Image (tube, rainbow, N blue to C red):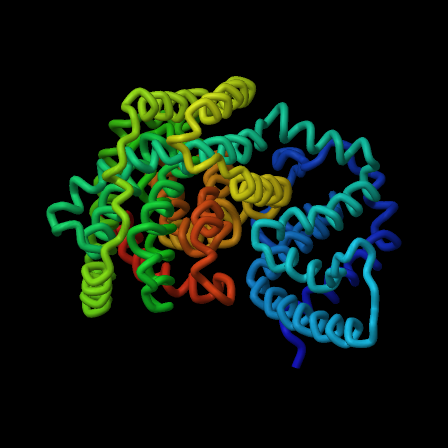
Length: 508
């Protein structure tokens, strides 16, 4: 029986092989600017969803191929475990072949042992952060065939300069670098420790405090910064105690879900809210009254549920922590002026979120400052943030081509189906893209606006691509998952808190 990765590979090459001769003539009839605005299709009078989608594919055949490649990329994200296992097997085989070659007297230039190209390639195919970037290659090849190289550059420039879609990936890279520094973690650790002291600073108390306070930070310092801080604190106070695999997945699913919901107390921090707040005239009081308190209630109920489910395991972790005295990094002294400067850089980055030239300039000053105060630093880690930014940029590039089918689906759903449809669509596309497309649907009532945003933020923890900050947490914590993070296990671990938060938004 063929597995999913092989099927995905065959489908992708089939698409590339047969796309050109079948649609070349049709593609030439479409204007160079792509994606096509939804109002340009002229299908407003068509009632059948299938007829609308068919009409849009006939008008622009590239719609179909762009979505097929996006589908294959999503399948790839669920198949990274296969590529990681394959890479491991190829590495073992390569090592055995090297042993045989050395035994027969083989010599290598400069004494360096050769690496396995196939194993390395499979390793990159198994990196979830690289998936959407890899699938840009067939996307751009087809794009160039239909619209020429000028069509590709026009599309990318439009995303970068007109729509500013690449601002968020750039922002995530910078804010992750700043939020993961020692002074920021030190300060956040002290704040959350105030709550952990209520439970005598046990691992259980730390776990509850991080989830009770951390997600709410996403409403003020943005979700990428909040998820980075929470993941770093969980890294130190929970994962290093080696909990069971089900407990690790439950914690990760809870983290992604609560961060997505926790950004709804204000109108300026969570990307899915930011996309519609100005258009629909939502402000912070509106967000708190209609979303914020419901989100916090759902978060607390979810934390309570998982605490009760793993109560016996918490006792083991508490005993483990008590038996092995751990280094108290929060007892170290970092000058207040260093902490204040880091917080100021973080605040300025958040304040200039929509002005990349300014926060990039500030980041250069930040790097100089960390170099001058390196005795108080971990050292700035840029590899993980850059990989996360690469993931988000690839997702934006693919996702921005999906409006042709998402918009008519959203516009034809009633209240209940719209809520659960938004949750479902969010699992396979960034929730900010869902709310942005919803803002273009005409005649949305106030309650329908509420429903679609509530559904989008509710489903933000189901997959790695459901909410923009999710890859940041996975990049920090993935070292604790030996076989890689399973998308299916993550999905099922996030379902209980997703259901609780959905109930809070839908019924309250």
